[in-house]
Structure formats: C-alpha cells, structure tokens
Length: 502
Image 1: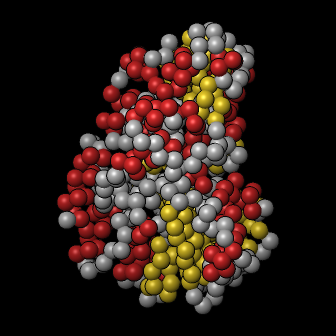
Image 2: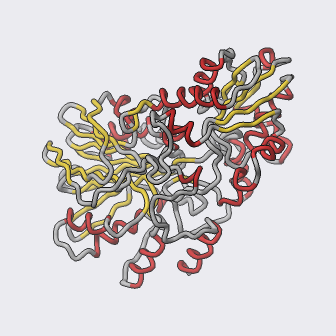
Image 3: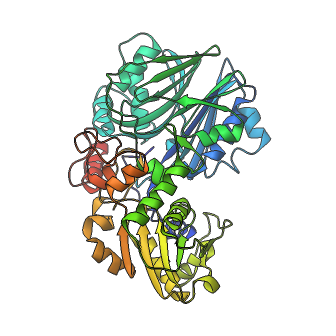
C-alpha cells in the first residue's frame, strides 16, 4: 500500500540503484501490491510463498506472510523479493499453521520501511487480526487525523493501518460487524484478505477497482489478486470476488455477504493494459487476448508504412503481436532483454549509468539496421523510457522509428493504488502528441483512443455517462470522492500530510 505520510530523501547511491537497475522499467506505472491467502491447507505458508512468487510483478520492494496455527499467529516480513526471504525451510517452518496470508509490495514516494511491510497485525479485543491490502484508501489522511485525536497510536505510515484502527474502535460487538463498519467509512480502492482466529475474510471495494479471485486446492480455499497465482500452486479457479462482495472462509466453508449498496462496477482498465500478468484472467477476460486485441485496434487506428513491428519487452509483446497480425507487417524481436540484472546493481556516475541501460535491454542490430520499424509499448509516463528506446533504435541503424502506444495518453494521476508521478511530471499532461513525438525523437507517435481500448475489451465504446471501467489515468474521470486530494495533485497532498504528521 502507498505510504502516504512521509516523503523521505534517499541517498544518491539508493537513487542510482533504483534508476539504473530497471533502465526501461523506471518509467512505468507500478501496481503497488499483490495479496494471497489460503485457509485449511497443510503447510499453508509454503503455498502462500509460491503464490507470492507468481504475484511478484505486482510488488518487488517487500514481502510478508502471517500464519495461524490454531493458537498463535506467526509473521515474517522482509524487504526485497519473495525469493531469498521465503525460500528457506527454516522460515517456512516458523510460519506453522493451516491458514496463512501474504503480501508483496511496491512503495511509492512515501517511506520505504519494514514497519510498512504487510500483512499488518494487531491483537484486538476480538483476537488476532492480520490484514493484506491491495489498493489505496483515498481518505486515509482524514481518517487518521480523526483516529489520532481519539487516542489511536499508529505504528506505520501505511493507509492500511487506518482500517485496523477503525475495526478496533468500532462500537459493534462481532469482528465481522466491526470490519463492515470500518469499510463503510473508507473511500477509494481495496482488495483485502484478513486472517483471524475464526477464519479468513476477503473483500473487494464496491466498484471492484482492484481485482480479487477465489480458488480451491483440495479442501482448502484461496483468495488471490490474480488467477496466475492459482495456476502456479495447482489450484482450481472458481470465480472472481464480485465488486462489493465480502467472502468468509471458515471450517472449510465459503459464504458470501453483500454489506454495501450496489453500484455500477468500475474495475481498473489498466489491469488489462499492463498491471496483470498476460496469463491471468481478470473478471472473466483473458488479459493476453485483450492485449492482442488492443494491438489490432492500434493498427486499425494508427497504420504506418514500415518493415518491422518490434515490441518493447516484455509488456509490449502481446500488443505488438496483435498489431503485426492486423497490419501484415512482420513481428520481430528487435530488443533483447537480459533477465539477469538484479535490482541492487549500483552504477556510480552519469556516464557509467548511461551505459548500464544496455545491461537490461539491447538492440538486435543485425535485424534493425536500415529498417523502418514500429515500436509497440504499453504506455508513456514521463517519456524518459521512450526517449532511450528510440535512441537505441537509431544507434542500431534504424532508417525510421515510429512509436505506437497500446493505451491512451496517461494524463492524470491515479489515487487507487498505483505509483503515479504527480500530474506535472506526466508527459501527456504537459505536451501535445506532436510535441511528445519531438521530445522522444520519433518519426511519428500515436496512441490508442479511449474508445479503441474499450472496443478491445469487447465494448461498443466508452459510455460517457456511465463508464464501464475506471479509466481516470486517461480521462480524469475519478469514480470516487478523493478527500485527501485536490485538483493540484500529489504535491499539495504531500504538503497537507506533512502538516498533519507534524
């Protein structure tokens, strides 16, 4: 979850590590969390660790698992990847129990610290309570201020902890009623998995902005962010948790509750463009198939006379296949990605840092030289990545470089659980498409239209009065109130929250 309350400076070496380890990935929108829980399984924590491996793309800065053995809760949380933290037998043995919940996390511009790594745990009057959260509570600062005035003492800077305090201070008697009471006070996006002594609870926000699915492994039930995590552990996919649905898993039984007023669903459209793994199924739709359809729509909307279609690996590959098939232009791997560059590779100095770009991606020079190429990528955020890629193609001898983006221009910040720059740093919010093409030094640049994106998802077009998805990052049409934010975006948010923390 985003850490909303402290923006700390990192030492120069830390910034170098972050910016150079992923020379093409540091300009991507990042989903901030993945969650996985299982109830009623032998070695539950080992299954959770495998599930988190499959969800590693949703969060790579930290991971945690909490297990319940019938008497006590056991937690291990650590900075870094799942591998290296949860692939040791001694760690898994410490996390004994038939039920467990896990979390992988990306931090945002807020604090990166162990105290914010989830699952968060608290001993409440109703018993132990562990929570893992994907999303963002957009009124967390306002709620936190109120709770602190009432005497709550916060141990983290995570918006997720607000939910724990709302549960703890609720006047209702049962844990379920307290949990529902807490959720009715929050706004924004959330998919939650909570582990208690009585069972496991899963919940998706009333608009269904963030995904959550149900699976079964033998007699055990699973909740997870994506179906690919079920595939990896050998579980059967049952269905998606519906928007606004609350799932209780207890004594081998699963029950469904609908505590919220029904609303028209607005799931995040960017799950299909980039966030989810292509081998996942989101709300009944194959992500891979949608991305290929996006590429085909992009080719119909924005044709170009060229020799090769080249994906920006790996997220641009399915759309590039669709573009090539629709346009008849051959698909080729013109950029080769190395999968052996770790996040901790530190490069001192600008000159060496620039050379480090080729450690992660390198041009297939023999293929590209003298060719007119179409580069397919999923999005442009700040534009720095696209600039590097286009220059790499020119250095490899490309005769022309045309860029096609498999989504509309990203012109607005996300407040629903995505690490987005403030709007002033989004290229599409500051430039026309022509100016953006000049900035990245491309011969031409074109984006998929918003209606084209909807068509790729099987819709006739975007319903202006009732959009079928949350597409606020493209349109500025936010589906919920944003108590902690205003029209000026993140910069004012940080100033406001700094005042509140002090």
